[in-house]
Length: 245
Image (tube, rainbow, N blue to C red; front, side, top):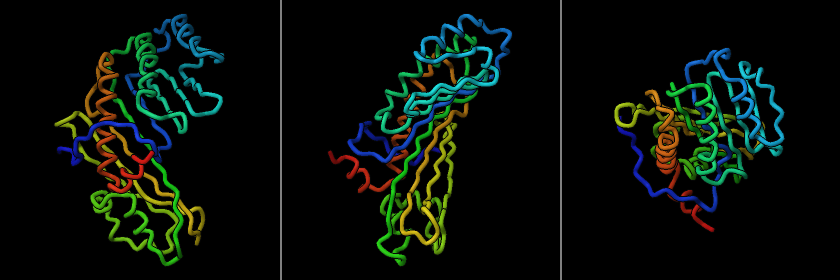
């Protein structure tokens, strides 16, 4: 089916409630015995301060910044990059790691990906004005009517609920070669608390193999879908507040 998202002009907003971005690639597992160990060692040596034992690659190797805002996971079947706020500001920062991913895949002689996945996690704190103020009203102030209708939110009273999450998916295989997933909901800090947070996770992943040579272009295309889906998932008022300097 065609995604219900409207085309938008991409921009970086002064304000955001995005918490982290994850980009992952998955491929047919590689036999470690066929890997050039010296090339792999040189690859990991580029990460300053990291002392890597390349023999651990079959089990997976994790690298992370001292502030934990950047995390990389390498294995013989996948690579994942996670970027957290406040480091992450725009998708070009995620793109900057795609060159390293491509080099890693080149060393492993991987030319095709089984799956490329990009997800974005958003979280916004809230406080009810009183116990009688409906959680649904709070969600309506952030999440769009279209999203809440798809999630069936109107059918819930949320009375005495500490946590609620619902997911949906769209199949865009025919038009874009992708699948889209969204999950939204709320979580209170504790029972009977007036404080909590709203969360929205969106994810785009490939439904067809991805050529490694087209990894950067494909990732940019997926990010555009995520940007358009975000505008579909939240209210116009939220976009206006994000636009304020």
